[in-house]
Image 1 (cartoon, rainbow, N blue to C red):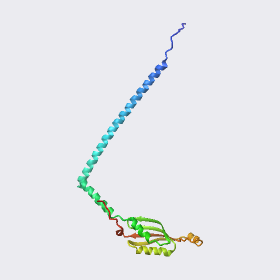
Image 2 (image 1 turned 120 degrees about the horizontal axis):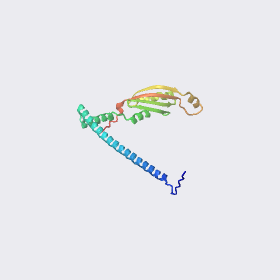
Image 3 (image 1 turned 45 degrees about the horizontal axis):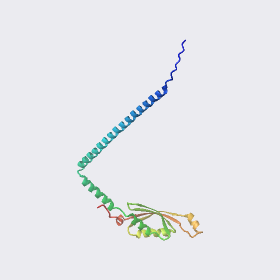
Image 4 (image 1 turned 90 degrees about the vertical axis):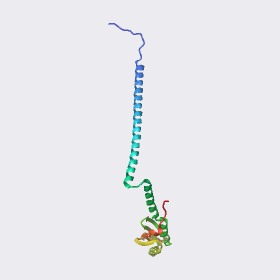
Length: 194
């Protein structure tokens, strides 16, 4: 048996292998980056083309609709302006309606809630010291300008407060829920677009 003796220094294979691995990873990274950038570029180009196509289709649709309706864009704008003016000129001034409702409130009464609808209805929930105050408020509302109808929806006596008030001077004995209908013609704004 022969023994081989190698007195030459060992080759460092690991450095060569690490370099190859590093270069391979760098190439994979570069190819992947180029692929992603290219895909994104083409996707952006496709999106841009589709947006242009959608815009041209919208213009074509508007043109066809105008031809079917027989109106030009200027005529459509004038029609919209007329509709807006009609809505605005028929608008009721809410603050004047609420002010009219509040001015009729008796001294020893207060409102807890006011709800307002543009169709000519106001709902008022109030606190009153006596039942006669509720009747007085209802009468004053009926005599006020612009108020057409007042309906007492619900009247509730506050028994707990009544017992407590016998010991103190604070008096709130009734809760009244009123439905008030006003004349919309009295409270028109009359504004509009020029």
